[in-house]
Amino acid sequence: MKARQVGAAFRRARQLSAPFAAQWRHMFIQTQPTPNAHAVKFLPGREVLPSTTPTAHFPSLTSARNSPLARRLFAVQGVRSVFFGSDFVTVTKTDDVDWGVLRPEIFAVIMDFFTDATEKVVLLTDDDQRQLNDTAILEDDSEVVAMIKELLETRVKPAVAEDGGTIVFRGFEDSSGTVKLEMQGACSTCSSSSITLKNGVENMLRHYVPEVKRVEQVSNELDDPVEQANLQAFNNMQHKLNPS
Image (cartoon, rainbow, N blue to C red; front, side, top):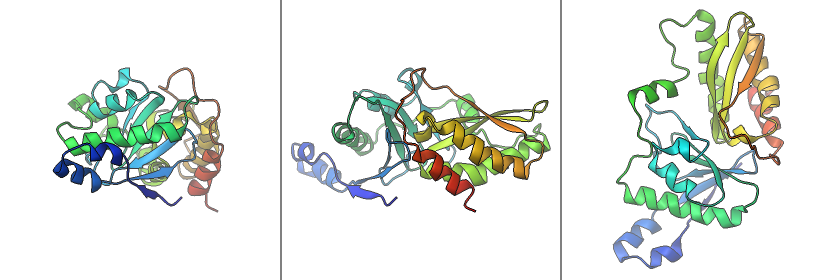
């Protein structure tokens, strides 16, 4: 869907000094809806994560200890989870708050953070960095695992990123032919995410990698998922992964 460009926090900007206010006026944030009605993709018009850090997912406040921006976003009442991509921030809300109330507060937090520009979005250790590169092909990877990672990186992740999320490779069981994947970002709280994996990702992997028999969804999300997720997540992903 076409992004709509919006300016936010003008009232707050007028309260600031002229030079600082000008900086605010020159920063615009684009928003894009996602297949999940509880998640919105915010594009600040600048790099969010460096190329060495493909994505970062924070399903709770406690998981955001290494991200100053995520912690600020969690301070906004109604924010359920936060996801960062290379140039976007996906915020998922709880079902008891309206976007009309939440959106301006999120704009203000993102603008404050990038205008200040004194902190990194995410502070990662070397071990954290290695874990994030889930589809990096390692020397000890089998040919099957390497093919799975390549397909996820080139075919699946770009499609999911358009909807404000990602799919993370969590392992492959040779004995059962099971690929374990975790959905993060906008689609992680969709009730249709398991259908998306089965009918979209699983079919594609089985087509190109005969050793793959099934896909299993794993999750590090909170135990109380949002019940009313947009079923369009399934239809949208199906079309992108299997356009024919």
